[in-house]
Amino acid sequence: MNNQYGSFASILISFLLVYMAYSYLGPVGGIISLLLVLAFLVWKNRSIIYQNSANKKYLNGDFNGALNDLNKAVSLDPKSSGVRGTYAYLLLKLGRTEEASAQIDEALKTALPSDKNLLIQTKALILWKQGRIDEAISEMEDLLKVYENTNVYAVLGLLYLKKGDYDKALEFNLQAEDFNGSNAMILDNLGASYYFKGEYEKANEIYERVMKLKPVFPEAFYNYARVLDKLGDTEKAIEMAKHALTLKFWHISAADKEEVELFLEELKKRTADTDTQGNKENTDKESPEQTETK
Image (cartoon, rainbow, N blue to C red):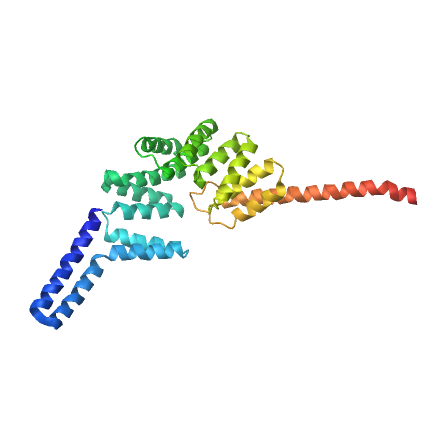
C-alpha cells in the first residue's frame, strides 16, 4: 500500500513540474519536460512493467518467460515482499523447490505483518514438497488462528490428507465446508477424505457438487474417477481420468500426471479383460448348441 501511495505521489509531483515548466518556459519547454518525466516514470516503474509482462506471459502459457520477468522485477525492487512472494510461488509450481524456499524466506524477512498471510501459505506448500509435512501443518494451523480464509482451509485440508491422517482430514474438511461449501478445492478435499475413509457413496455426492462448479484442476477429476471406480462405474471413471489428463499439472498438484496415467491404463486393461472374459463366456454358452446340431 505504501508503494502505491509513493508511486501516486511521484506521478503527481512529476506532472506538477511539467505544468510549471510549461508555464515558465513555454510550450517547447513543457514538451521537453513532459518527455523527460515520462522517461523517468518508465525507468522508475520498470519493476511494475516486468510484473505486468510476467502476468501476460503466464496467461499465455509461457511460464518460463513469466519466471524470467519476475526475476527481473525482484532484482529491480528487492524489498517488495509481494513481488518476491509471487516469484517464489511460481518457482514452486514449476518444481524449483529449493529456489522457492530461499525466495520465500527472504520475502518473509521484509514483509509487513499484514502481508505475511499469503507468504506463509506458500511457505507451508514448500515445506510439504520438502517432505516436512508436520512443519507445514503447524504453519497453517497457526495461520488459521489469526486469518480465517478459504485458501487457508483448502491448503490445510490438503496437508492433513497428504499426511495420511484421514480422521483428522475428514473432521477438518467438514469444518472447511461449513466455512465455504461452494469452493471446489475445499469440496475436493472433503470428497477425498470420504474416499480414503471408504465412504464412497458420500464421496460421490460431494464430487457431484464439485463437478457443478466446473473445476480446472486435474485432482478433482482424478479423485472423482477413483470414487466412480470403487462404485463400479468404470466407463465414467475412464472419462474422468481422461479429462484430468487434459488439464495442467503443477509441482504442487495433489496428484502426479504419471499417477493418473497409470490409473487410466489400469482401468482400460480391466475393461478389456472384462470384455474378453464376457466374449469367452458367450462362446462357451454357444458351443453345446453347435455340438447338438452336428
